[in-house]
Length: 389
Ligand SMILES: [Ca+2]
Ligand SMILES: [Ca+2]
Image (cartoon, rainbow, N blue to C red):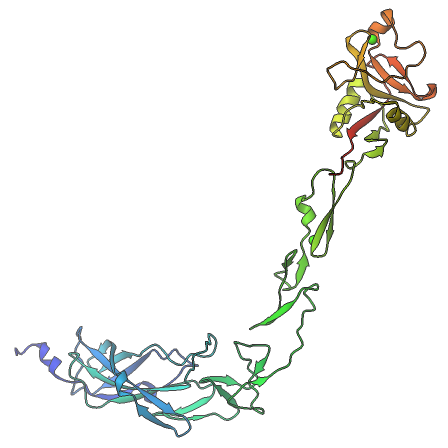
């Protein structure tokens, strides 16, 4: 062996002191590392092979003693701090505060024996003892002398303070030390679903939570349920009216579009303003309709009962295309056109040449009167009524 610094690898560092007398409360820090001081006579070497050896010890809090578990010995990461100081990493903390509790039993206190090696083979003779514990229900002194604190619960190996709820069964079980320090006191809560708008609620770790069903959505501010207004997304077809309701909606069947009235077998708007023939066509188009096509006398009779006998109304009949041949404005093929002409109408000759439109003439018993197309009158708009499927 040459006289270089590798000589030190043959020395096994002896621990003289452990951080905080070997005690670590998981309530104050994670307890994943311990600093240990080493006798300067057996110095630590900065080397890849520097390692800590860790052996688990089981602590019995009923007697305040520990039992070494030899089969658990293993090497752990060691960090070189100085020739007389090392940080040893411990196995992942076995003492988990009961936040992420599972069915697995915990332990409120856990011991470890530590020793150090410069070469990963030869370890110091003095093994040091460290104790990890949860001060929520355990008090510990060095060397695993742990006792349970009175007035706390230790259930399935986890600590709880008086009044704590079971995180896995929040609404129904509680640590009540006047009932038991080692088991849950069953609670008999009344579910509080008052803000859920009639929807059910269930328990989670924050208490009662609304289970908003279909047709409802959760209010992020209050946690309550409120009705979804489905009508805002226009779910109904045709002229149907959407009626929102609590948790649902309905489409109410309607024969005529909004603004139109059912008269006879059609849907009509009777104007309250006047226009010439083309303006009347345009205004009806804006209302989704057309000037009316009246095919049967029964329809004509029904319609005129809704009209004012002091007014005249544009309808679609005209002879713009062929003088003397009257057609519906929105029908190109000629066919039988129902007419109820005022005597002397339709106009003929030069009068007929300039009079190509027709109004229903209220003062003259609602008979068809041939007028110029720029004649200003009231008008009627029409859409077919919707047939129930
Ligand atoms: Ca609704
Ligand atoms: Ca004409």
